[in-house]
Structures are given as C-alpha cells and as structure tokens.
Image 1 (tube, helix red, strand yellow):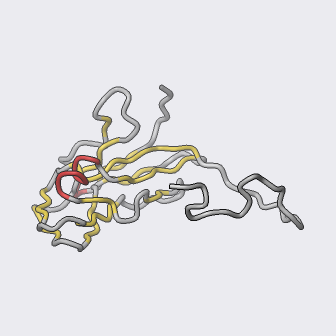
Image 2 (cartoon, rainbow, N blue to C red; image 1 turned 120 degrees about the vertical axis):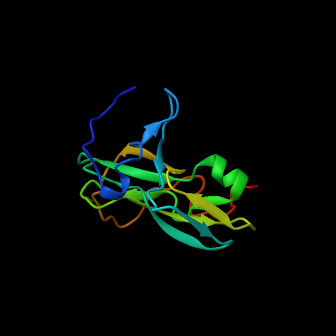
Amino acid sequence: MNKIPIPVFRNVDGNDLPLPSYATQNSAGMDLYAAIPGSLTIPPHSWEKIPTGISMALPYGFEAQIRSRSGLALTDGIIVLNAPGTIDADYRGEIFVILYNAGSKVFLLKRGMRIAQMVIAPVLQAEWQEISALSTTQRGSGGFGSTGI
C-alpha cells in the first residue's frame, strides 16, 4: 500500500491523545479521537462540533474525508452529520467532526473516544468544456429510481 507523508500538528487540547491511526494493516480510514476537556452528552436528534486536537498540512492534490465509524453508528446511532466531510489541502485549522445522534438515547462522549474515521484520497479538479449537446446513452436523463429497485 502506498503511503504519503503528512505533516501534523498537535494542538494544546490534543497533546495527550494518540495521532490518527489505522486499526489494521489494510484499513482505509484512520481513527480520530475526541479532544474534549472531559465528557459531554449529545441528546437524541442533536449534534455537536467535536475537536480532534490536530491540524495537518495535506499535500496538494489530496483531500481528507471524514466518515462515520460503523460501530458507533450501529450501537449508538452516532454518525458524522455531513459525511463524508471534506478537508481541503489548503486548510490549516484544527480538524473538527460534527457528530449527530440519530438514536433515541442520550449519548455520553468521553475524552479520547474514537469518534470518526479519516480517509486520505486523491483529488481531481474539473475543467468545464461547454458544449451545445451531450452524447446519448441508453439511460439518458432517467434518474431517481429509473433503473428499478
């Protein structure tokens, strides 16, 4: 698997927390940790902006995608609200995660909990080429269920 070096800075509130890490050798996403002072609760159908305690300098041509952790989603209904969230290569601030409680119980978030996963991915930028008509396909303009259930 290819690896790219990414400069990372631990903010004061994240000095004692682990850096993002892969749980297994072939994991696509790195775990992010809650850099909150102690604990906080997220009521059902509410969300909170959670700091991770780190900032980074992604290489140009890459993004970081912030995604839900499947275990938190399944057991507690905790998801990343804007998943996948995007961190652009020119962003240098602290990484935050918007956690949403889609469950029916209050969720207790504690300092150092693994709250999301971050995937580093290459990015292509589009260059528009305006034309007078599009090529035709069998599907055409059919969408929203046009291919069946």
